[in-house]
Length: 136
Image (cartoon, rainbow, N blue to C red; front, side):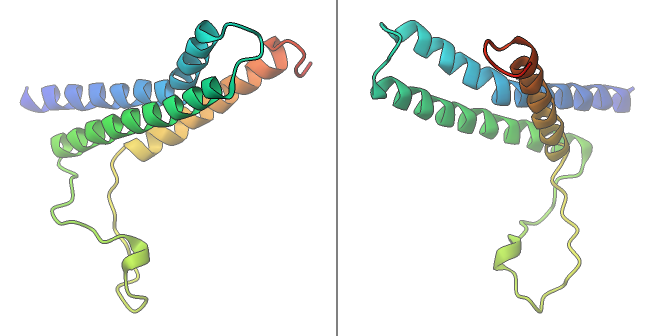
């Protein structure tokens, strides 16, 4: 019973990471572009509005990314895959050091690859099929 509950919680955390990843790649930029469209008083907004959008997207993606990293860490703790010691980054290792790396990054890397793929496909569909003046 306890294992089933842990498995369910782990699956829920993967789902949260998947939704958060799609939110990061699609939701954050769309939100900031929507907000800029509401703040603009003409069809040619000032450079300040563009800087607001750029800064807002970068800051929001950093916050969502940090939250996703926290959820990934929770998932790794729950599933028992959290490394016991701190791992040295690869570019700081000696070239004569042990060549085989056994690094565990959790499921977040796979979720991010899939979310970026979904975001790119959705962007392509929108651009070629629905955007005014684009594609087909």
